[in-house]
Image (cartoon, rainbow, N blue to C red; front, side, top):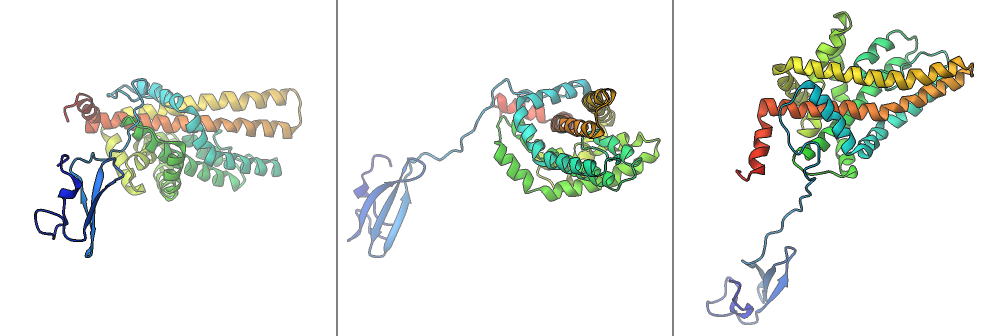
Length: 337
């Protein structure tokens, strides 16, 4: 067909052997770099696609072999925690930027509340891991405690949706821009809100088991926000999917949750308690101590993405174990599918 001249073409309703009277045939370029033959006549134009036109393909950006999820396989809980640090370092600025979208307004709002109520013992966002915030909030006398803990849980769920979408792209050896991830997560704010409320309803009753029941319940649902973002599920479907992935490997999930809580707790105690104790020992005004503590709360811009990366790396591991996703990836890499 590529060797045919344009004058040999004719409209579909014209007699064979030539173009109909009054018909002008011409080649026009199309978007794919090929050509379309447009025949215009008294009865209207007829466009015929060239058979030698190359199909248009979407550009694919490969991240290379140095990306943290270039090769996935089932790993130990310790390797899951190590892999979370690799994910955080890989796009550190982007993940911290996503956390800033939801946590900076929260930190600033709480700074105003703390300064206006100096005697308040309100829990600071990020001053304790999400699984321990409810314990400290129950000891305060201000109603702001519970409000900021709930807002912190919603922020962490929203960040989990954003990180889940990003990590799912890395598993497929592609990358998403900051703006694309932000728009996707912003459109699913309601999923984060429902997830935060439902997971609280699951984990708070577990506090009756000597306080540590929170961890045992959290092991079932700690990847729910990642699932919602990575697999594009609704809140209840994400919770069911999270439970189905973690139920079979429950003790591994519990080890990851406990290890992640310990790591973030150590970070926060060092950064938050250290400067506050130093300023108090120097006899500086209380306002200075409160401001130093609140500025230390900016550590949440690192610990919150780290918590989301721990859950995301656990999601990748559980999918390898339950769904064999690592085998699918190896088949694609070897050209078998």
